[in-house]
Amino acid sequence: MALAVGALLPLSASAQTAMKISISIGQNSHQGIGIDVFAKEVEQRTNGRIKVQPFYSGSLGGERESIEAVQLGTQELTLTSTGPVPNFVPAARILDIPFLFRDKAHARAVLDGPIGQEMLKEFESKGFKALAWAENGVRHMTNSKRAVNAPEDLKGLKMRTMENPVHVAAYKGFGIVTTPMAFPEVFTALQQGTVDGQENPLSVIMAAKFDQVQKHLSLTGHVYSPAIFLMNKAAFDKLSAADKQAFLDAAREATKANRARVDEDDAKGVAELRSKGMSVVENIDKAKFQSALSPVYAQFESQFGKANIERIRNFK
Ligand code: EAX
Image 1 (tube, rainbow, N blue to C red):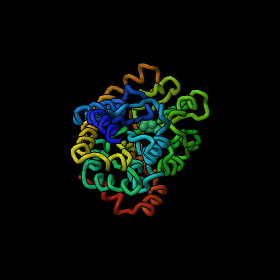
Image 2: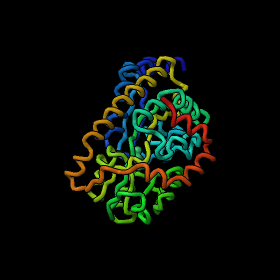
Image 3: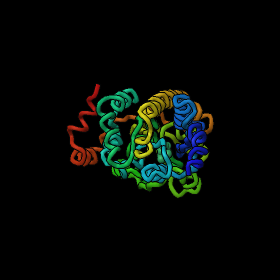
Image 4: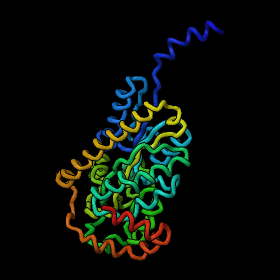
């Protein structure tokens, strides 16, 4: 016994802990940069003791499956949009209300400020350590049928939505025929015509090459899509205080790189997608889209509390 323990000691002292982190889209993307920077930062900040292996393109499953795996602890980490998050942490629903944020700067300020930081704590009772908010981006609509200029143009379009109750309610409010679906299935569904369209940030549309299967893009900017670094809570709790801080700092650095890439993608996205053959409606009267949702907003106000929504809207 004593011999065995003695023999193991030098091994465990130099042992490396390996963890997994996943995203549902490809490596060459705002989320790919996010998890690559995260992995590099964790490794550096723990002097190579902890290695985080990135998995891309839904190779460990879609976002809902990855969140589930993190909750169960079969996978330590994931970077996910908030799409499927309300199924695990209902408090997060409020962040996916359409036209809640004026722009990315407003959203980032809310997420990095007291409202966002309080929300991160909501994840702890559900088995997660939420390390930091990151960003998926401002979502726009694409489809294969027609140019969308006004909300009326959306009526009857069959669109894939995220598995998010707030999105589904809002898009139904536009008259869209909603089909919730995990992201890894979307390209094929668009290609085969199972659905006419989908909505996502320019970053995702480019990374997933939706230009190959969608003709029309409208810059509806109808909702800001947060992303979040989630970790299995037990795995986080096991870390030393210094390593916990290393993970939190790594997530913060990763978010900087992720947001910078979103800004880059937004700056070049329209030109790039046009050059690939998409026809783009840039000037959208957003007020019309917003007023089309009045009945749905009333529903959201009673569900989430008008004061809570106003607190986010008015945050400066
Ligand atoms: O996180 O499911 C979605 O549309 C998400 O925006 C995408 O997977 C990127």
